[in-house]
Image (cartoon, rainbow, N blue to C red; front, side):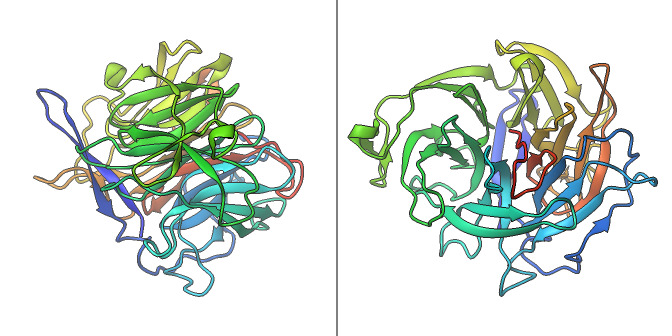
Length: 404
């Protein structure tokens, strides 16, 4: 069952507290959502993204959304994978960042924690077939399952690729104010198995979140730390010969030396809880902050450029979420459109903020001459949507153009 952090701040010191809440809405209980193609009844439908498809895990399902609205401003959707609660025989529990392999395999990575803790949570490797929303079929062909640090929550989140096809993942670690136990791991092919070799690069990330790779430089968001930069070379195998000569407390292979630096500090420019990462123009990046409901743009040097999304002045998280949402996972389409998964934080009087019952949305921000337009809702009434993946036009089993 999926568990996600919720957030609170102390007004004087703005101390971030992160704990966990259980997905008791769509993820752990059956619902009546159809598994066939449907259309949303929300969104203004301005603009399109050349046939790109947005993937999102919510309620432990995997859904796909067309980015081309119809004449009524609706976006076609498809339930690609149904949760285990809704389909005990064939269902899977899907969540986290979604990453497509940059080859012609049609493969992608997503968090997969069906039946956890036995088997443990990990990252599923899937083969996607089909040309468009309504035609997709996904089959699991492998799984990446690491060991987790003692006392940490075994929760997956980030994924990415090095240029030669090595896979990167993060797991969240301790979600509260305890030790930093989130992990960054590099995995080595082949991936069509449940026994995939790996090497841990970092085991001290404070609530690890998204991954973004640019020219084999790896960036990782940590909600209690900031955005970190890792420079190679990275291990090529799980042993001394491959540059992975150490072990961690669990006995798993671990690199003895890694180049790590702070790229963007948490807290500056209202970036209280860095979570989602996505590429921005000119080598920069977008970074989301769930608690403050913002998305910032940063330049190629890590310097703040501008605010792309923020709640209207005077709004606060209460029994209703921010009208512009609380963005966690983010992704960018071929035309530069920015997509985000809004987990829909709310807070009853006297309670800490947490995802509400069906308050999540998937939204997009279209840019007009480089300026961000107000966000459009593509889907609403969602249960804990947390990750985004964007697949550019082309058959999923053929030469599509995956995007980070």
